[in-house]
Length: 107
Figure 1: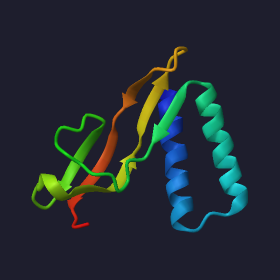
Figure 2: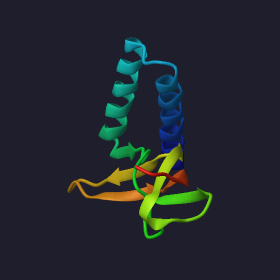
Figure 3: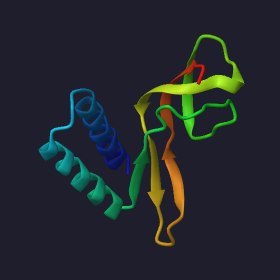
């Protein structure tokens, strides 16, 4: 299983780099195919970028920049995504927590 999670992390990194440099259509199609194949293996991943963060959140391991202010903390960078394993009944279990950077942000 760890080899598959490493594969997910590499795909996620490629996706992040591709997004920051523009999304060439050819690479985007390949990324979607890779995500589809991972889904066939029961693996899904999610980037919590820009989502609200609270210290009760259990799907992330966070490094906090600045002071913790519960009302306005947001995930500003995702180093590793949340990875889920899906069983035959469709239930998802977290097999990797996201590694994120959290900062105070006014909306």
